Image 1 (spheres, rainbow, N blue to C red):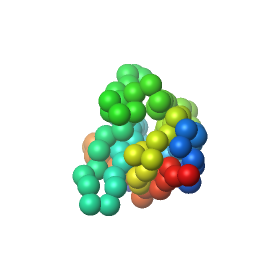
Image 2: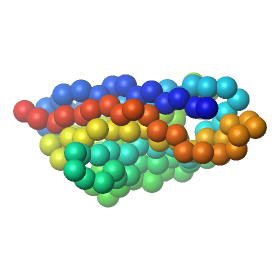
Image 3: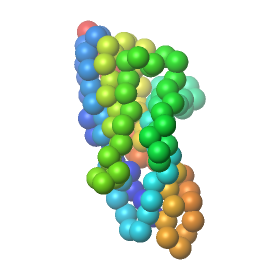
Amino acid sequence: QVQLVESGGGLVQPGGSLRLSCAASGSNFRINATGWYRQDPGTQRELVAMISSTGRTNYADSVKGRFTISRDNAKNTLYLQMNSLKPEDTAAYYCYAWAVVVGRGGSDYWGQGTQVTVSS
């Protein structure tokens, strides 16, 4: 089993920045692709950014040039640096990982989410 815990959300003014973190814990696991999704109430969860085990990244068009995803494999931690935030970035942000656990195979894992609110 793999647990994902997000942190770093909060209230920020338009144009501001936030850095989200996602710490993974568990036993005998390896994370392959991992990333961030976001969801507003009443809408579908959407991909924000993804990073592969080799560091290849993919971003939603709406955040390209403003958000940067990175990972520290030694610390099993994922980051999302969000700059030039807009009110439309307001959402709950969820950490995602596809991880392989020894003896259990690969599976999807999700964090509980952290709220980001962009408002003046």
